Length: 628
Image 1 (cartoon, helix red, strand yellow):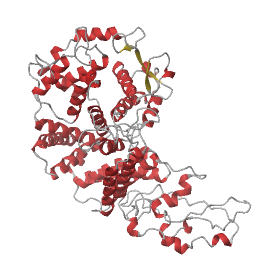
Image 2 (cartoon, helix red, strand yellow; image 1 turned 135 degrees about the horizontal axis):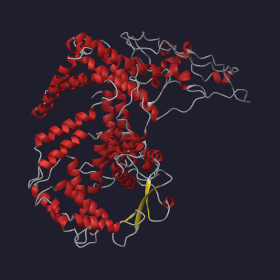
Image 3 (cartoon, one colour; image 1 turned 180 degrees about the vertical axis):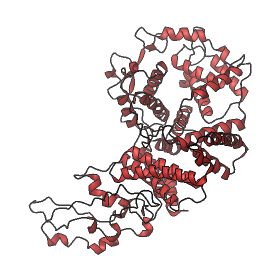
Image 4 (cartoon, helix red, strand yellow; image 1 turned 45 degrees about the vertical axis):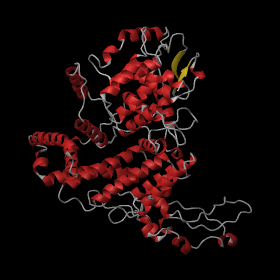
């Protein structure tokens, strides 16, 4: 504890920050005790030290002020009035150097945040960034400072640092699948739970800056851009925090094998929050908060009742889970709200949700009145069949566009997002009495394609000599049934049982060769043939890509026969028997993905010699597959 004696403000801040993230409010006595401890660390010369009587330090001053923000408030006796604001200002001015850098305490060294060749920022006490090493903590502080200094993201600051290099380095700091998607602080280091915030939380700022420099605007109504596009794998980070950083006894840690502490608990929770919620600045909301703050600047600290606090959290969760781009389908916003309302009522919400649902109903009634006065949209309000046809037509347009791009060989994030958007819009059709019979299959297929494409982007296949789309279409395209949906979760599983034979080079001396028939769609087993073209656009089945035929596999060269090698080759009948049965092909893709996820977590736990976690994750994987 002697080492921690100079870190009292930090220990208080980490604890208060964790409680705040969890939505837990301290009692008045505990708050007063924390604030009184911090006030003992405040110096008459300005700033806060690490303990009573210790010299002022910029870092402990920051931790102290943030603790006052969490536990204190305006008014006499609530802490904020006891802060020596003028003294802190004078202290910070004394720490500032002529070149713009800061020293952290009187007589201390100069710490300058500078961008390195890697792209991240380092703390460098020497002239030139070549002596520094990019670090997640310094990168977070530097990026936060740049954002506060120039919140308008002006071109002047954009020329001072390399945003693309910073994003590239930050993305590469996320760990491999075997590391469960945690973040490391420096290149080639182990992942650490605290960087879930230092780097994971920085992506909100990086996306904010990226939006400021991205001048590419597509006004095409059919162009889908997810405004909540994320630069890192949020789900993977959540998996690391919940499965690797969380300890059975409570608290969070660096990694398995380490003990939990307040530092890692605070920043793991912060990273978890940042990965689960996408926060956008809303001027109207900011104005409401400002007015509310002015009305409560008296001697009492405004406290939220538990019911109100729960309502706010539920509203924040609903907002974070919503996916409705502002640029597209504005006319579908109200059906989306109605969909949320109907599903919420079906789940019989408690009294804490009633206020939110009543407000939502009021918004819908107001929108109904406005739409009724619009001649172009009037039929959509009074005629259920017209509304059904309008939404179905729009949802199918989005679905068809995604399918056309997919069949044409376009493999990128936009295609995955378009499939995801179509699944949401198709879900709106459940509002009507007679939804299409294959609706759930289309929704399931769209979600399957979203997952498949995103997994392909994360783990791209090795490059082939021929065009990937032309050479693998017959094998990698999922089999389509009469409803236009895949019969198997992954087409690769359908041929995984086939033995592979090395192909000798043409004309090589001493190597046996066997005749290889021309391979096309006819050369595949009957149930592996290319799917037939889907019905035309606008029909109930899965739409096809503008009647473009499925490309067949290119012919392979003929080789001389060699009886010695052909004896070891399996017969076509044996090869066919090794293919999976229909029962195997019918596994739900979501079950496979869930089982794979638990298996990966088990492997990661074994890497850290955490046997108990590995056994638990393997059991969960088996339960997912067996349905127990």
